[in-house]
Image 1 (tube, rainbow over the protein chains, first blue to last red):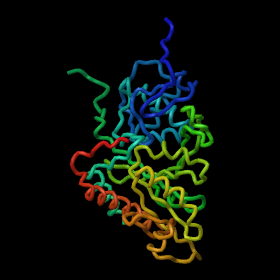
Image 2 (tube, one colour; image 1 turned 180 degrees about the horizontal axis):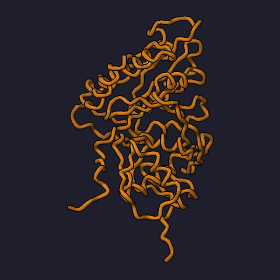
Image 3 (cartoon, each protein chain N blue to C red; image 1 turned 180 degrees about the vertical axis):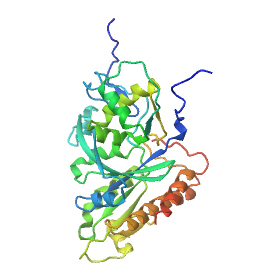
Length: 128
Length: 207
């Protein structure tokens, strides 16, 4: 069965326009979950059944404790966009969970929640 | 009772929220030092692919000339609490990378524009960028040894800042002063929220 390719450039809300397929992500360029650079991820320990590659295993090993997408990318020395695709695969299979991050809003800045701001302020005050 | 492998699987809500703050300013103004001083980890570098829209494109045809560039982003981490982790991302200093700020600033809480009083003009581009995008920022004057000390108000005038933009003095090598700068930013955001009366549902303004 021939693969069905979408028309036009592949885009993803979380990643933006994706340029070319990556060999490391098996040619797939679409992250199906929403990851930003600062989304915190963690391996769940759930055994997944997909056919995952070495890179998936590397990602899993790096997120045994909570860690951001940017840190995983930096430690693997691959572009963050690639890590987002790998994480997306793993999240689909339940092997990884992702925390919240402020959603990207390219065309308009939205002020953050007051609760969030106060929590950050109080935590910073303790560091003075 | 079914045994499962996911007995220790945490719900996503239990994971900390990642918060992004941008550290901007001209080349050589102390961004790297600022991030290094505050980060609890050895600062890391990640590659991000960004879309560059050619500034020289003839836009009459309505087609933008886009290309992608890979840039290295340096960042540091401050774990504030079990539920909040702050990430400080340095923006590239050279203005030829201005195009990437759009993507880098997506989802950011706000920004710190570092300034060096010996070359304030190096921070103009950053101030301009955040003003245009409506992204809240504070200006932090990095007090280099041997540089003339200016008052915050003199810096405000020189940078033509709006009255509400806080100006702080800091030494990028001293952690405590860096924390104060971040606090200025957070307090500025809280004040902006209150004065906008946005503690009810924030309106989605789209132009």
